[in-house]
Length: 318
Image (tube, rainbow, N blue to C red; front, side, top):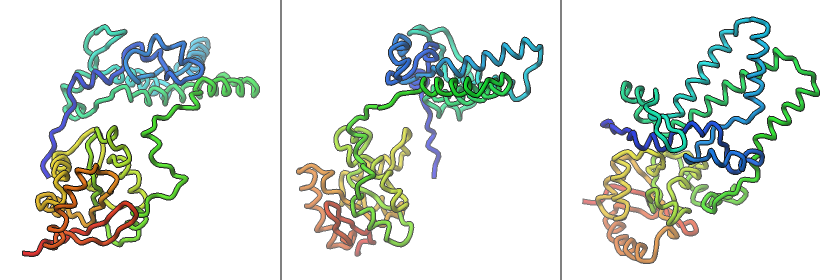
């Protein structure tokens, strides 16, 4: 396979990086700080405010260390370096504050110097590397301060209270899969079939399918694949390989010879057609081409399970 040569543009990375004020903002759903930090919530979902308890414990540990005139341990220094580095990464290629560009950030230099880092888009996700050293440094501070059990329990209670964001309102498209119910029978059928040959689900929709027909979005097929673990021609991620896009575009012409040939090229065995994923005109066109594909042996119908029909791909007759 040839390399994709894919990279994220600088402007796209800046869009998803954190502003300086992000370190003072939390989720709007947070029951404690949601409204208080609203003024700092200016650059999308980049909410990196860690609360007051954990940073407060770290500060108390630093003060105790200075009073005793001791040097910090190597572990504490390493965690401190990780904390600062994560913050610089989260800021992205350009340092911004309340809509003002303050100049280039270290991440921009790293992107220009090491091309592999051009693949990273959402630098604000470095927030996880802020939380980790903060939590560990706070734990080290507690070991040093040795608070009484009742005080320690109170600190834990307040720290957990700061994170309260339940209940979270969920959009309707996120409620497509109810794990309390039986999955569509086609997925159980697939699990019973031997082998690990790739399969493809149709319709094969692009990212906008989440708005048009969310029940047949690529991500839904991926979730249900955990019931059978067979490789999928379908897929969904921030990066779309060229070959995948080609096959997805050809999928609109199913059951055309070109599309079936592309599926054979990647070793596909089964085509699962979801009837409800098609509009009336799309379904009529598909049905018109099906007799010819079946007659020349390119497809063989092997199962009809509710609203899903399974076809096996075969070599076409001469």
